[in-house]
Amino acid sequence: MSSLDALLRSPRYEVFPSRGTEQAVADWVPAGMTVTVTASPLKGLDATIELAERLAREHTLGLAAHVEQHGDFLDARRDDV
Image 1 (cartoon, one colour):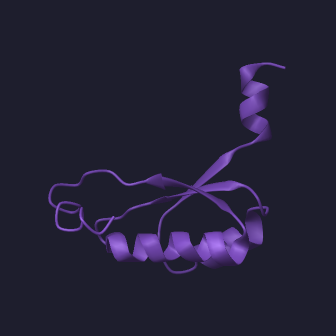
Image 2 (cartoon, helix red, strand yellow):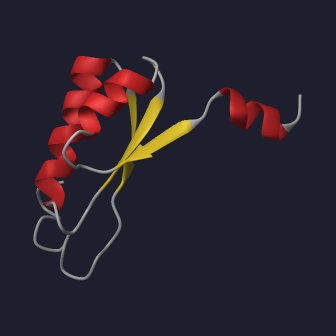
């Protein structure tokens, strides 16, 4: 099996917090898959963390953090993360 085959057998889905994201993930992503919730400067870190927690708790999904530095976006919350 090639490395591409291995990647295609266990894809990761990347989502960001917005209206309808949680329902779309519940509808389309099989339980047990890994989902990356990407932080959005527009929605803020709280919305990102809340969505990640709900997906892990209520939809039995694995999570991978994807939080990038966007200017002072994370500096104000660094101690909370």
